[in-house]
Image (cartoon, rainbow, N blue to C red; front, top):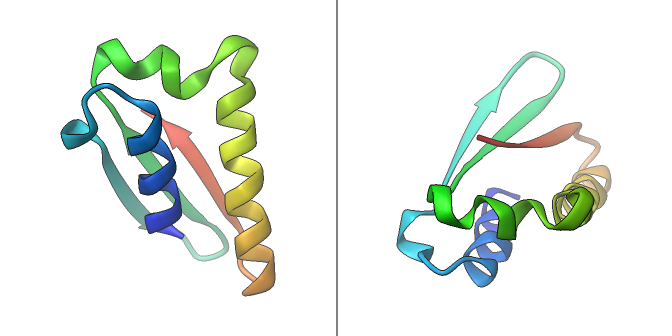
Length: 75
């Protein structure tokens, strides 16, 4: 799922080499922290957060198939 977040983010931004996804496991949930260049932050979030919400939905759908709980945070 880390790869899904990375592929989606790299396709949206102007500086794909600055996209970094960190995976942090807690006991009940996995958190993916997405780091992008400051100039690309708006492109990843989208108008009214629509792109970020869609990205979270795709990742949660993939996680559901594996019986996992995940979330995506844009840092």
